[in-house]
Length: 209
Image (cartoon, rainbow, N blue to C red; front, side):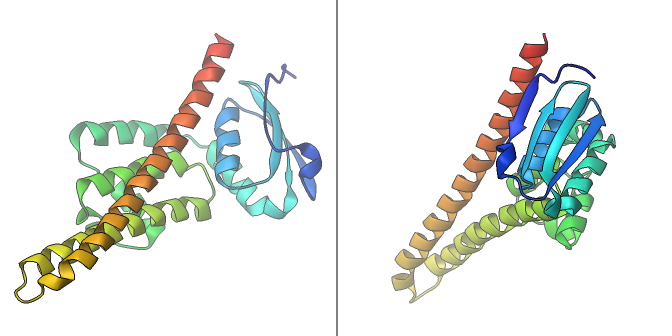
C-alpha cells in the first residue's frame, strides 16, 4: 500500500451506516470530487494510485455510480470533446448526450443561444462523474434559469413595441433584470466551483512534483 498523502470529506464520526471501500486507481482525486458533487457523506484518504473511502451506506446507489464512471475512460474523452467544441463554438458533439439526460430533443437545445449551449456542455463535463440525479439537476438549473431570463426578455421586447401597452414596460423590465441577475449569479457560482476544483487539482500536482 502506498502512502495516502491526501485526505478529504467530512469527519469520520459524523458518517452514519459506515461502509469501507478500497480501490487501486489513478482516478482518486476525480472520485473524491464526484462524491462531493453528489452529496455523498464520505471521508477518504488517497494517493495518486489508490483511495480508501468510508461512506454512508444509505447512498450506495450514488456511490457505486460514481465509482463505475471513474473506472471508465469516458470523462477523459469528454474533456477532449469539450475543448474542440469551445474552439469552434459548435456544441453538436455533446448536445445529444445532454438531451438524453434532460429528456428533450437535440433540436430544442440547438435552438438555444450559444452561450447557454456552452454553459450546458461545460456543466455536463464538470458533473459527468457525479451521480445521474446530480448531473440532471445541474443541467436543469442552467436551462431553467437562462430560459426564464430569455423568455422574459423576449416578452419585454414585444411589449415595448406593442401599441397601447407602454404601462407594462417597467414591471416587465424589472422581472427581466431579476431573471438576468439570477442567470449571472448561477454562471458565477458554476465558475467558482470550477475554479475551486482546478485549484485542488493544481495543489495536488504541485505536491506530487
